[in-house]
Image 1 (tube, rainbow, N blue to C red):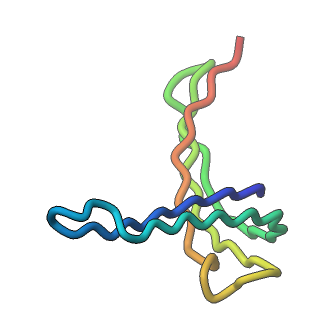
Image 2 (cartoon, rainbow, N blue to C red):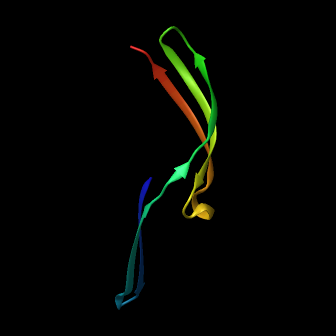
Length: 78
């Protein structure tokens, strides 16, 4: 996963305007493992709904990004 985040802070005073302005950018190229379990629910011969539950295990910055994951997918076969 490629993640790019930008934050900006500005401090201003009356009659003086901006007195401080800071911009910070971070770029992460993250790798994760995501084991999942799920079920496909057929709606008819060509349509299915997939429900999945998993967990995201990030190798870098795990305290920030590890999380549960839920997926609802619609599948149509042509």
